[in-house]
Length: 392
Ligand SMILES: Cc1ncc(COP(=O)(O)O)c(C=O)c1O
Image 1 (spheres, rainbow, N blue to C red):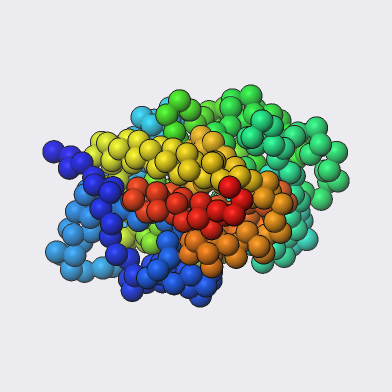
Image 2: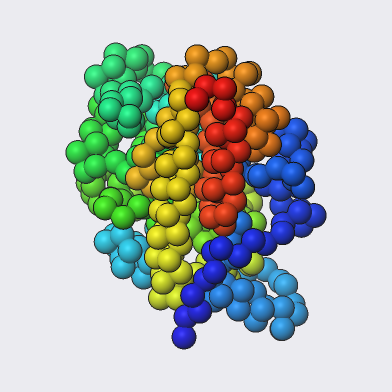
């Protein structure tokens, strides 16, 4: 029997080596005792019971050796992708990395050379640009355009930006931040853009299970079945098990696969036993029921957050189609980032990601993590209201 999760339970994470709570003071100057941590994409919820049981089984046996025999793990991935996403995956297409930032770094190694450029649609998940630059590659920022309060692609403008130096493109699908669930037409346009400019298309779909009611995620591999591409998926965001440092890079195309295999070998990557035990357990009917309950809860959280935040003059929270990451525009306050950030961190005592770190177009935003008990979300929204009370 599946035990229904109690997402309202407030679990104290301070002093548990949680980057979200134990590093917020160092990074944002907000004390974890008085503040509310709403930055890094890590949830304050326990994963489904089956995940804890998988670890308990390992603990009972008590030996923590190297991982081997991927049959159950691969079967679990195949089941999940077919059932939840209508996508058929073959076991030999699957590589297991130490998460998807690691997967991104391996793609850069496999498909580009130092000095090459990589296309990002900005604002976008900040670690992409960080690893691209750290590996001696360059970032080409192709800005998304804001149309009626949501991000849209601007492919004609991006075509004009291409000068032949870019060799790879990373799509974030669904998009972080802003939570867009890209339509089939948008995915096809992205695939055509990559083809036109000879870019290896890498589709990071880590948020694909966290889609709000009324929206449907389409895997790029389903939208563009004939195009060589690299798919990246993981259990980490879906089940809140990022500490297991495991992700999947799934490549059907034999040429891209051979190159990626070369980089995996050169970097000596092998699987994390804890991550794979948790992932195998999570991709199950019990895990699926838990995700359904989670998404309904997050949908409730985003509604209560938006209801209050959107009454604050000058603030606008984007209508999320996916993810638990509210993307709030402060430009209507007329304040410089230093001022609205100071009000949020010092006034409201809320730690949220700074928009500028997501690249062009993010400067006037803050990103708030809503995957926390509802009472905290309500409290954070009220604190924001108080911190901007003089604008009422
Ligand atoms: C789009 C995207 N990719 C990758 C990651 C991180 O992946 P990992 O923890 O597997 O390295 C995140 C985390 O928020 C993300 O939003």
